[in-house]
Amino acid sequence: MSPREVFALRDYLSPDLTGRTISDARHSVSLSGILQQTCLIDRWRELSGRSVLLSTSGQLLAALAMIELDGVARRLLLCPPDLKDDHIQTLINDADIDAIVTDQPLRWSNAGVYLIVGACLPERARAKPRTERATEWLMLTSGTSGAPKIVGHTLEGLTGAIGTDAPARGDGAVWATFYDIRRYGGLQIFLRAVIGGGSIVLSEPGEPLADHVARLSARGVTHISGTPSHWRKLLMSGAASSFSPRYVRLSGEIADQAVLDGLAQAFPNASIGHAYASTEAGVGFAVNDGRAGFPAGLIGQNRDGVEMKVVDGSLRIRSKRTAHAYIGANAAALTDADGFVDTGDMVELRDDRYYFVGRRGGIINIGGLKVHPEEIEAVINRHADVRMSRARSRKSPITGAIVVADVVLANGTDASRSEAIAREILSVCRAALPAHKVPATIRFVEQLDVTPAGKLARADA
Amino acid sequence: MSVRLKIFSAMQQIAEEQKVTLPQLQDDLSLHETGFDSLAFAILVARLEDELGVDPFTLAEDAAFPLTIGDFVRAYENVPA
Image (cartoon, rainbow over all chains, first blue to last red; front, side):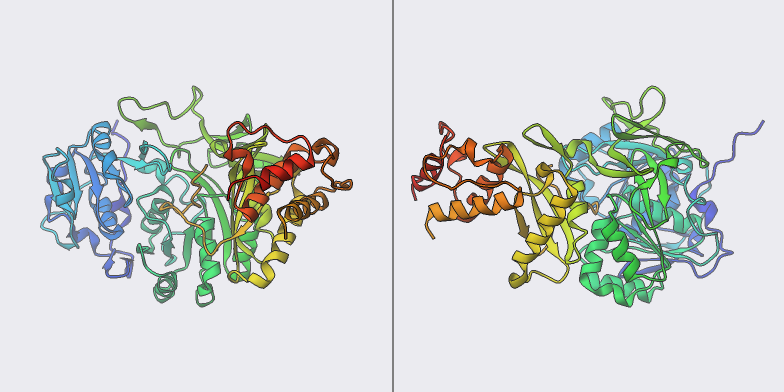
């Protein structure tokens, strides 16, 4: 009996599909000819069977190195750009790293890893790597506090949802994402481009949004994904009018009705879907009916082999797309005894539909009554003049905490209207929420910070 | 506007929002009789902090919470500038 055939990224890059590219703001590389090239100066041989930490200054080199090393390295640890130096030594120990691929060798010269291989733009390869094994893909969680956790995936698990919710291979899809592809949400898009036979346009840190959108249009992007925070920023910028993708995808945060409606209005010819995915739980499902939340029928066993249940209010997922473990000496268990990942995302059933209400860890306690900031934001965002909001806890000598809200208006702060808008927002909240969930104060701000992972920054959460 | 008037105006605003009918506000009215619950007072203290720049109940560790409207207003009036 022969062992099961192992597929690696290179197996999806045969030169029969021409015109495929991967690009950032500075370079465009042909994916059709990529198998004849190397971005590691032919040194992939030295990395065979190694645990490789991949740390590059930009996403393009990371993408090319992933293609070259998948099926060659034993492990591939993807470092996002905001990885803190303090965490490096722990990661190297926990992931058993014995080689580093980087275009910043000086940063890694004191890491205690002997083998450092430089990454550069591709040049003609002398010999092509072969798929020798199923590489273990290691990703870092994007939690805001403490050291990131290392999450172990296989390519098979990472690509398990592709095919069920992606266009057919060879339809010329040009993908883009506001995410960094070294995070789960962004990697999903990169993999869709590679496996689906398409192209991908990468984001560029610090690039003004209008320039980014102009680049997306110029490159003919058809499929694009980002967090609701990314999308709200795009809708606010006014840059959306020059851009007409066919497919718009949201993930990584709760997609409320306001952002779905805003996107439907801005992109009348696009299909708009929101996906539930996390680094640990993998892709759970995608919803394409234009409504917030998801049909209650998705709970249980669904056709894609994803099984979901709700226990103590939080969504639990078991599927072949979930990560298989946290990696490291003292790593916690990733699943419960039955193989379910507890996502920590709290849901509420209303009229045969589940709605996400917030993170279990983000609850604000108001004199013993609990509230998720996200459920307040979803109500505030319904106001036509609001583009983005953040509910947060504020200390109170009376109740311990109260909820207050920071609000970004769609058309900038207008002092003459702001008092009236604040009153309207409060009255919308009072109609929809119990008293303790109504913000005590509304503050108008010019902008709200978004983390490197594309999520609304919640400093106090 | 005096501190006292600012406090009364904020209370009237909250009463309207919370659908509470305030009795005539005077010094010897007990806070209990205002019909405000602890949430309403928490909102009041937060808004007054935004407006007056001070929260006398967090400031002083030993501050006893006032019993009457008069005590409440004095807590704000007596904060050193």
